Structures are given as structure tokens and as C-alpha cells.
Image (cartoon, rainbow, N blue to C red):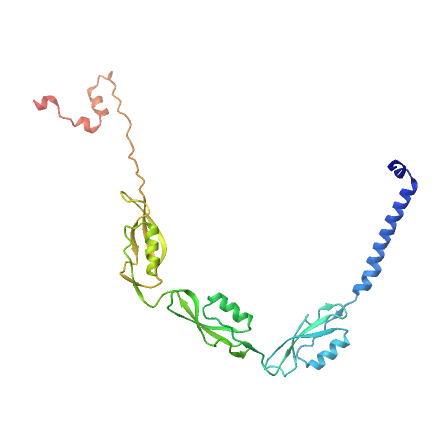
Length: 286
């Protein structure tokens, strides 16, 4: 059956006709159908409708065969009410007919927003919240509190209705507590035990320095700084920890070789170490 199909001339004629038809269809779609659908080779230069009234902008865009949409209204004292402040795409861009132009229009009244709750948020999240609500971060002042970079207070109360763009001042925690705490006795403790004792006291461990010492178990606290009996809650200490002392072996000297065939007695003395040359003579003892 397959042999008959592949040896039949009509099979090849039909295949060739199908290829020609497909190529012709693609060419027609590229040259006729798609250009007609996408308005190929047709473009409109976007007019500048900023700094004119909304009524004039609407009339101009319609005459150019373009649509428009007001995406934002904001207050700008430099322009009268209902004047176009900004547009997208910008003027002089080439766009397709019937393209939508997005406009920002000036309003006589400033838009208002509700102030979000920022207390107990970390500083980064508080800044993002203000940005999302269209508000600005004002001054940042710091007060002592145990948790670092946490908002303690905000100048505008949460839930207040304010103008968009209003400034909110923040009071931030510096990570230090208001009370003084006693530094626990940690010298002689192993490192994990010392860390636990400091954490319970409200203190933090910062840099850990290692010092090689003899006869002390590695990872034992030798010293710390600042060396004070009391510190402010949340402060950080530097610990000095013992580590294994690596013994450096002394370099051994080479063996002393004495040549018994040497008849020169002076040469014998020169080959002996000082400790042997200085040994007392038996005759001297007598």
C-alpha cells in the first residue's frame, strides 16, 4: 500500500500544490492581511497636550484620531484646575491610529489618603508603606529601645486623613535599652554557656577573637570588652576565646662525626660541641 502511494505521481503533484498554496497564503497574509489589520506604514505623531486645558486636549487628540484616558489627578499650584500636567506617550512619539494617550490632570483639590499604622514595623517596611500610600518620610530620630530599627512613634497618627504627599516623621529604636544591666561573670565559661548568660542578661555577643593558650580547654572565655560591671541593655561585647596551642618543636642539630684516623689532636677538639670541650679533665680532678 505504501509502495503504491509513494510511486503514484498524483501524490507528488498534490504535495507540490499544497506547498505552493501555503507559500502563497503566507505571502498574502504578510503583504495584505496583516498590514491592513495593524495599519502597517501608518503612524500618527503624538501632539503635545500638556499645559493646556482638558477641553483643548480632548479636542486636539480627537482630531488626530487618538483616544485618551485620565489616569491620575493631582494638585499642582503652577497650573489652573483641569489643565493637563503630563501625558504618556510623550509628544512627538509615533503611534498607531486610535492609540490611547494617558493623561495626568491638575485638580483644584489635593487628593487625600489615610495614614497607615507604622508603629512596631521595622524602618524599611515603614518606608515602603509610606511610599505605597503616597506619603513621604520626614525626619528620623532615635531613642533607646531593645529592638533595633523599629518604629516607636509616628508624627501623624494612624487612620488620620491627610493630603497626598504629606510628610511623616518617625522615631526609631536604636537597639539599646533604657536600663542598665549587670554583666554576668563569663570568664572561664565555655562559649555557648557565655552566649546564653549574656543573652539572658539582655546583652549581645559581637566579635569573637581566638587566643592560643596552654592548659586551658579550647572554646573557653578568657576575657571580654568593654570590661565594665554594668552596661546598657542591648549593648554588644567582644569575647576572647581560647584555642588549641600548637607546640613548635625545636630544630635538632646534626650528629657530630669524629674521624679517628685524624692524627691532629686539635682537629678533634674542633669537632666536639662546646658542652664536651668544657668537660673537666680527669687529670685536673686529681
